[in-house]
Length: 367
Image 1 (tube, rainbow, N blue to C red):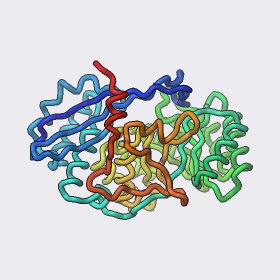
Image 2: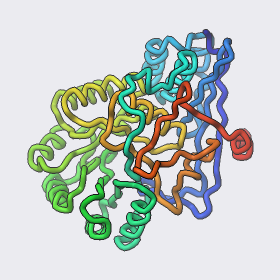
Image 3: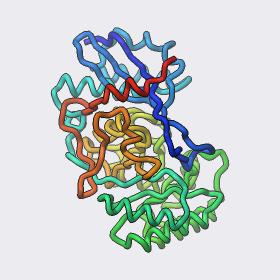
Image 4: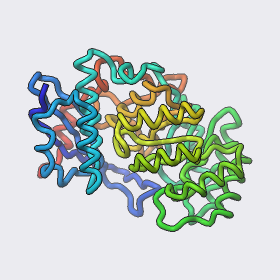
């Protein structure tokens, strides 16, 4: 089997009202993603998506054309080599896994180990809201079936963020898990470790399930200190970290309780499987970052379900501005949870992507 063509469709869904991500200075008036279709000479097509426009990929396209998509190790090594000097095209690996699953006649999760058919999820919110509004949203999420959620805090307004967690805990009670993201992983200046320790301890008193990204990720000694000083609070990080050697170092140092390597945006599915299994063998958690669209969510779902990740899978959802319908606008049906708060792995071969071709045509951006 050979790759004959790699088709890229840039898509943009207008957002009204706009979505204001906590990690961006300006709201999103539209949601952009790139749909990828890897065609082969045997008529099998792998589907994936990539964040952004993929400007510059044309210069590297010839490295993949004519190669066998089933030679996954070779594909991964090529992507890693390109990633040393620029973007890492892990979406292409995900499309190859989709092809492999279709050729084998099995869901990708089965090829990766088949540890679970469905996973409990947490509603991963994206906006900064007032304490009262966040508590109200938590009640709505619980009514929809969620049993856990993540709240993002603004490090410039920490007291308001802690109050949001407090008000949410009072609203939902103790049988609903709350994760907190402090958003410091990509920071170029390390937060004060003493203040961070006090903050994590305070959040621990509110019964949070984990605290995510309390420090810039390269500060592995700081992460290790936090875990040692506050053992009753799980520490999570590494969702978008791209360095496999540094991730291995983190595992060696036992720096985290929860490892979150994204299979499409960070290290790819093959490497994430290895690192995730190493984390599980050390009795730590692996649950990938998934904040993109429904196609990338499916790739991470297959990986986590295949190796037995968890205990919860990230499910980006923050109504009314971020809904499954917006996130998955290119899919025939948006992904949603069942009444028990689980996301089921599609059982058709490959990643189980079913596109809405009318939506793809309607929201395609003409170059």
